[in-house]
Length: 426
Image (cartoon, rainbow, N blue to C red; front, side):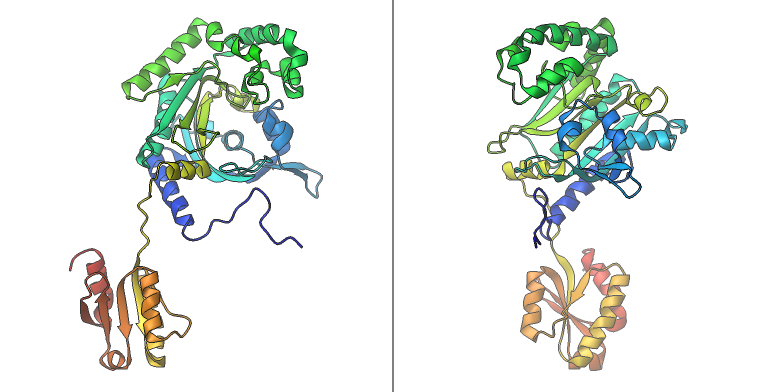
């Protein structure tokens, strides 16, 4: 019997989960400032959603999805990414009909892909993402990029590189597609099996292939930037102007195509250039996906978004030696000696917790000194001492673990006293 966590998954234990909570709180606060609201979608969806929404020529759909048949003989898939689910919810719940547009959403949640597990790339991983639906303004492309950059920077990351490209509109992509087919057709037999299929279905995906990345034909492949029509060029220039206005540095990479079929116009990735981060440098990526809402049964609605891996974000923080300012101190710890004191500590602990004070006590019948050691291990700010004398006089001996000072406080005044000292009032 295998009782270990499945390959490609991990347990997040106390001491680590606090880092995750801090990162989540940072991005939730950022989304509040940018006026994005949270959405929560099912962990599994009908398989057709990802086949249609992500694209049946992508590695995700062809090789990486966890798909199963339920008892009703329906094909379901654990979500491999967040955008398709969010857009499905947008259409199904008719969010396009809300008076306030665009609809700006964010999500946190586990995603699932059958990949070779390696550092920062798991089979179950957690994504944070945002989607802005209902605006074709280049300014919102810049806003989405700026939110991603702001999150990383506010957490302390400095070794960042923003790479952007334009995939153009439908006309531009069609012209570029034809050029790619003409370019790669003579080399078809030299390409990997996946790229031979991509040449027929979606040649743009060849540029994203890892196996053929060093093939000479990759270096001379026609750039999408050469096939942008005037409208697409103007759109891309507007995005760059907005980024320049915000002081956000970027590099244009003509080979950046992203791995999902639904992208058009703006595409971007944010990378870590920190020493020792690893060979896979991408932290997050996203882009515009005009047409996806219609593909999933909704009205014509432009959209743009991005997603980041929390695992890779934490790796980047570690690579740059950044310690998150976690609050790992306990407000109070009860040290009780004797049966009556232990019983009274139960009551007082409950009263303090109801008043919003963080407090814990011994539940293992430890000796007096051992209880103080527990308080030290938990970094308690104050130790609340109860013994026979304190019970008789209905007081608690409150010890400040920083200064060593002690003060006797009556039972009925304990809540107000601790609220004041924890606010720094005494």
